Image (cartoon, rainbow, N blue to C red; front, side, top):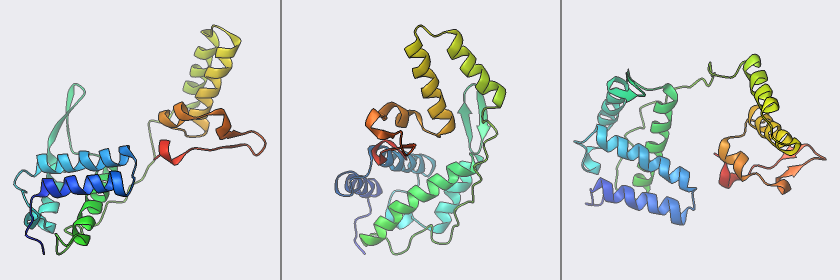
Amino acid sequence: MKTENNLIKLFDDFAKECEFSRRLRSETVRGYREVFKLFLRVMPEVTGVEFLTSEILTEFFKRIETRPRTVGRGIKIGVKESTIKTQHTKLNVFFNWLLTKQCLGKNPLEGIKSPRVSYDDPKRLKDNEISEIYAAITMHYISPLMLRRDTLMVSLLLFCGLRRGELISLQVRDIDLESRKILIKKETSK
């Protein structure tokens, strides 16, 4: 194993490789950076690769689950299962990179299972709320063109599951009316 144990320097090398060599999207690299920053903030005692053990990672997830956080005007304890899964996944990619660079002998997440996540969203819009959105568009339009545009945008968001960035970057050439398909580019999507 290499003697280099500066974790921040190694992560910076990893992030640069992701961005420039592997050509990952900037949002993906930003996600890696955010999870790593959180890891360092929650686990300040981890200063080098030699501290990366299964026990340390278990402690990290325990701290995340039990630490108080300010959310809005209130205090919340813990995070959603999907957040833990995301953190697990992003750290795992970095740890596997450390393995390939021979900076780490074993992935500390190897024995720690990622949580199973159910993506049932209780916050989804109800039919009457969708009707209210369309009614608001109809009541406040300035021109027939704006009415059609706004109705189309809301319909794409609601019924095609597009994210805001995907809708904003959508171009006319991405829509095939004959085959009733919309092309979402990987550069603008997760």
